[in-house]
Length: 161
Image (cartoon, rainbow, N blue to C red):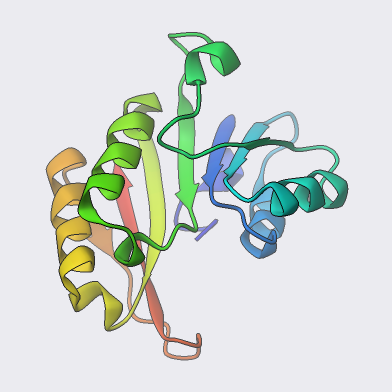
């Protein structure tokens, strides 16, 4: 996901749902020197652990649909990459829409939104709706090949602003 998002050339990265930090480690390793990072995590225990594990990165405990981006970065700054580990197909459609409508306006022109889906779950109603919603908001959404070695198998969505 870090490679698909072209994190290596990003000046400002937003990670939605860093969880326990497995993807965060790859993002941190890929970021160029001097790049800024913000991780938004709903679980307060995960947020505390992430702050200890990655002291050079910034984490905030909040729902992605509620985070105050204006207070964090002002009204004009944008993210070059938004990378998401959120379980989109597990979310009701109104939550999918609320999150996307809140974070995607913060994506810089030419920026990338990257997330994954588990193969099979993307065919459930919420997964189908997510894909449709993502295509509506970011034209040119692409899908990677299925990574069968992942358990469960998964693929990556890459969308450009």
